[in-house]
Length: 186
Length: 238
Image (cartoon, rainbow over all chains, first blue to last red; front, top):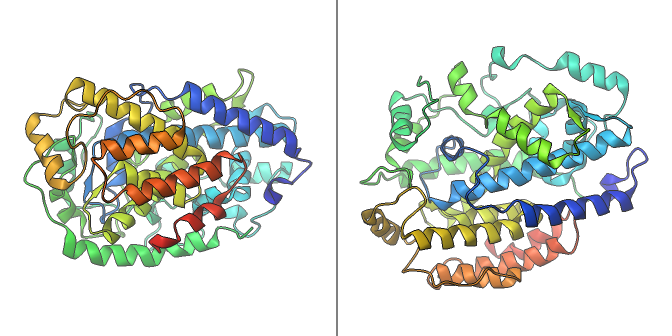
């Protein structure tokens, strides 16, 4: 697609690698019993949406596999982008560039504020790489800005899609339904 | 190709609408279990407080474990590839965004059809609508295998007691009677048929399954980004 013709990208090679990637994904990673992601945490993230009332047993399992494919997809595209610059290390700027260039990842734009102004340009410039490293906030000290609005550029604005329940009863409910011992409570 | 700005701005009105719907349609269920997430907790979640920042423990719970993310990344990449720490963290956060994104879309379909439980079909439908066509085929195979295993054991993988199976029937989801030992589906269209059979004729999913089938074919013909054609197949839902 036109969005992939940036910075000397070779469409035939890219297309072949992606096709090979999907074939591999279909064949090798459909082990029903091998869940990479904990189901209880997927359920908790799903229920951050206050409109979500009930979740069938299969849905978190299906999402677990879907998330695995999502990580593989994002990783493979980021790797291709790093290779365009002859690098062997995937950087945050590679992930940001993939988010900017790929239409199905548009919902992640809020996490990539630097590229919002330039949705088509890939961030492959070394100066941009330095800026990325400097600008990355420390997550442990990060507070979600109050009143976050869709479309407003924020760093790691997870609050957009995940309003946080504040009632203690909610967490008790989670404890009762989930087997996640790592939940430290409020 | 049109960029995704409509997606970003499209989310807010839906959220408001869904919040209004939630106030009227949120009903608790009589039983709490790990198989079906009870709605009782949602009454507490109905009050949205966005001022207070999340504590560290809660923030950690918002993400998938980063070790799992890294493991999947590594098996995707050649052995000589390296990943910077900030790239790992960025993808970790993207996964949570993805779950919320797909869940929100699936839940919207549920509410439109006046159902309360998000099913696997809703998740698949949401992915197809949101442009993740490449994911639908393998996930359909996955969920069919998952159901076969579940049926063979006579209960859910998480040890569903018999009483909960009745709960399934009451909700109009899950299995209506045991699934026959169907062979693994070769063509994906067959997988869709299998899905319909498992759902007991699926009054609600027949059209959805057909739509997914068409979308899957479209997605399978190209590994490039193919979001727009998929949307046309679901014009009937708008």
